[in-house]
Amino acid sequence: MKILIVDDEAVVRVGLKSMINWEENGFELIGEASDGKKALEIIYDTHPDIVITDIRMPVMDGIELMRQIMLLTKSPKVIALSSYDDFQLVKEAMKLGAEDYILKLEMEPEHLIRILEKVRARIKEENENEDKKMSFDRHVRKNLHVMRRNFLRDILSGFYTDEEELRQSMEFLNIQLNAQHVYCMMMKIGEMHRFEEVSDDELHVLNCSIINITEEIVNDSLNGYCFEGKPSEFYILVSSKNGNVEISEKLIMTVAQRLIEMLKQYLDITAVFGVGEGERTIKGIREAYYQATDAVKYRFFKGDKGIILWNDVKECGFQKDEISILNMKERLHRALAFYSKDEIEELSARILKDIFTLPLSPQSVFNVMLELLYMISEFCETNQLNIMDIMNRSYRSYHQLLYIKSIKEAKEWIRMVMEDLICYIKKEEEMDYPRIIVKAKKYIEEHYNEDISLKEVANEVNLNPSYFSTLLKQYIGKSYSEYLTQMRIEKAKVLLQTTQYKVYEVGLKVGYENTYYFNRIFKKITGMSPGEFKNSVKMQ
Image (tube, rainbow, N blue to C red; front, side, top):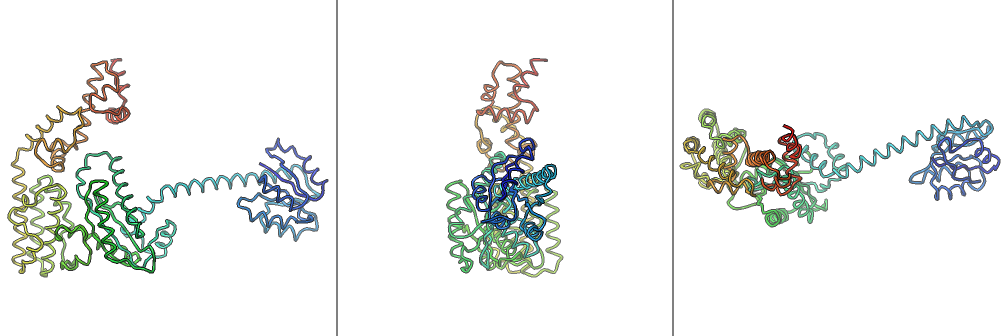
């Protein structure tokens, strides 16, 4: 702890220097000055921790010295020296931040040491707090993108209800949504089934890549922030870079089209966009979000158009007035994926009961038709199935649905759809899937030590990858990657027990070129490393 003494009386400076064993008490006396001006020069050069200064001095007194010290980025602590008649000046010194004061005529070593130790403790506490603050600031800067994305999710989920709190949070996170209106773009990624069997780390890298590419392209011409929603879904909030200039739909379409091209070029994935618009308020942002989400649902009704504006959706006649069956989507998809005839029949009975017993308007019945077609279309898209295999008799395009004018005809179409779903389930139940699973397991058994993918095995049994993955989970209870990993580790255990191969050689023989990865996977499954397992076998 470095100390500077400032006093115009040499006898006082000598007395202070001699009355305390500075080093023994953990202090270093780095210099002395006879006035404030000379003291400032020493302070600039040596950066003392504590300055013991007289209040009355020529050239620059202690009060002015303290004023100058206060201007420094990191200022030393000050202990004032005074005489009996300096009471007003002492008060001024304390106002300027002096830690304590000492009457020169009553100065005793023990008293001075107590004051210095008190000041040292305060400096230590402040330094620790500063270190914590710097660490916190570094942590905030490092995780700013995560905090932003969580904040944006909170807006959409209804966590924020106070506009001032919203403004303060946006200011703290440096989120620049400047214009009076904002756009929300919902980005739906296609072919995500290709990534079902990748590790969590690989999927995290993929999602980060999608977000980084998206934000880089969006921020070329707009202020935008991208964050994850449900699997295969991302949201982008954008506003104008110039708060006085509103965004044109043409610019939004251009940016979205550029994103579609770049995601295909760099990551080989496709995307469709739904676009909504709202005011830069909690209500407005959430409204834009709902519009964007609803717009994407209508991708099946807009042909090959990859960008759907909410204004286009409104032209479809979509309304939310009396009844919706979208809350049944997850149950419907699960029932179709696992061929649950009972659940399909239960859903069918519930939908038909509402349609035939509730006093619905023609628009409501039309909405139910659209929602039913959307849910089945999305299931087929996700699982790479031909929709005609499921809606064998009942399939109608959006434009064909427009020709259904009467409620009676609409109800009959819905009944036909539900009958088709039940027929599809019955047909799938009759297929000899255990035979297909046996064939797949045999192929994996023969090629487990090669770099075989889910797609390769699925091709071997003439199924699409996503559908094959669903069957594995149903009949084996494991995903493809879990089953392959388990087989490889079991083979590795046999080799470790019965051969003299080194660990890395065993890893290579069961399909792991990376020895570190092999060790990590082996220990995760067995609870011990390959070396530990091998040694345990020898001891038996």
